[in-house]
Image (tube, rainbow, N blue to C red):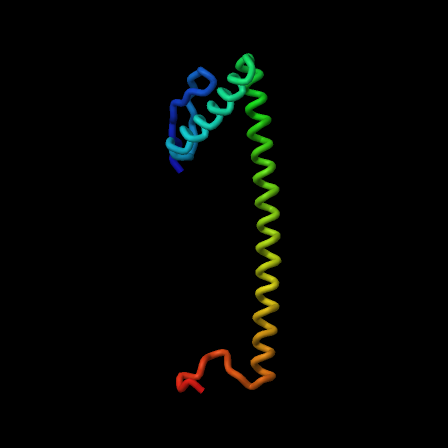
Length: 109
């Protein structure tokens, strides 16, 4: 994949990023990091290095929470799929026992 060069500004400093990601994506990421640093600087005057470290820690915290939520949702989905398979199997067994068909009779009987 082609490498894209994107000029960004984070924490008042200019950088050139080289990535396979589209420039629009890199700009979104840079804006997010810059916004996090600005939020920290609004709360307390920090050095650029301190704001960078705290922003990185906050973003890592957000990432870990999102990963935990993703894992929980994947587990819930797997359990729901398993329950659906059990219900479908039970339904088919019930149809066999009653002699019914899973397809509706077009004659309405």
